Length: 312
Image (tube, rainbow, N blue to C red; front, side, top):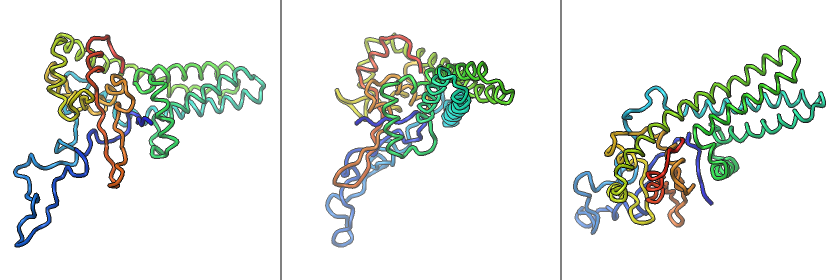
């Protein structure tokens, strides 16, 4: 079973390196207070494993080159998406009740669909109950079969459509001035959030396309660049981690990415849902959890470089 997470989850971008023996042999003292066999401490800082795998610090994109300063897609935007989804659901619920008791069943059915779509968007960005199995499973299904909702532009289109549809239906069918004012307030939230998401998604997609264009000029060397930077997961079944992808684009065009941007990029470029975001797996026999890093395989990287513009 694939296990994907929403791009707003705050998870480490790396994993503990290797298996349960990656931290060396037992360092218990032997006879005479000397280290036991195999228990000598590593010489220098390179022999120690940090809490983030092969890197001593968390993988972060660092400062952005040519970025969109002041417009980062941080957890506050995820909360804005959740608020917009709840506003849509509340408006659809109130409008649906009024239309049901006035026997306008066709418009009532439209409200039911809007309520359902708002619920899907709320599950994708809910800040609470994220550890529940039901929420995780539904996020996985939505990410797999409605992948457009994992992208900023896709969510912007969805919120703009739902907000306009909800306002049109409520304004035409509700006669009370109070309900019309409530419809205006509730519908403005998803519309404003949708427009903002479209603007941010367009800016970030343009930046990613500039990186793709620069890599396309090195099309013959993309395979060599991949082999040079894919250090954590090398080999035919490996891939570039988020830090390695950021290093690659920085070397070619001078772009560094924020962690939130890298999550969006990986959601858009990686074809295997299990490799798009971090998956926590249980290691049987040792009672430990291993966090698998998101990675872009060679085929997806080459396909992106040779393809067209990708919308985030």
